[in-house]
Image (cartoon, rainbow, N blue to C red; front, top):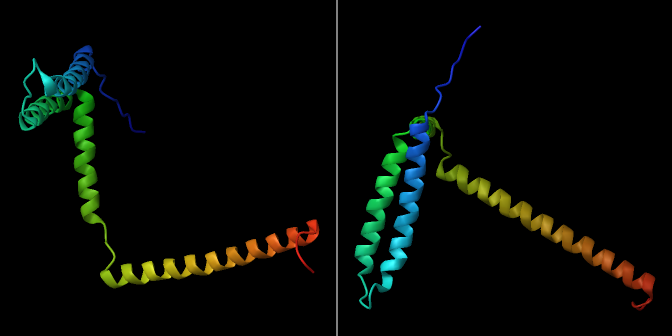
Length: 131
């Protein structure tokens, strides 16, 4: 029997996450606030760079929390798993795409036929069609 204990997040982790969210929110608000600040337009480049710096700081703060460390570990593991995947060749991709297109065409013709047949039947039953 394996005993697996999880680390408990401290209140400091919660504070870090709240600070990161507030910092990101303030960065977005500042981006729009400085669009027309006291009658002079601040360059879009400066606003975007400021937002990126603030977002980077928020991500760094969030990544230093326990939840952030778990997320970073998950992302590293996911990247390793993607590297292990066997991707289809170009020929396999083209063949599969062609098969899907043929099946869609056949099904669309079949459904069009069924729709037409049902429409004709309903018209005949209601007396709208000529017999």
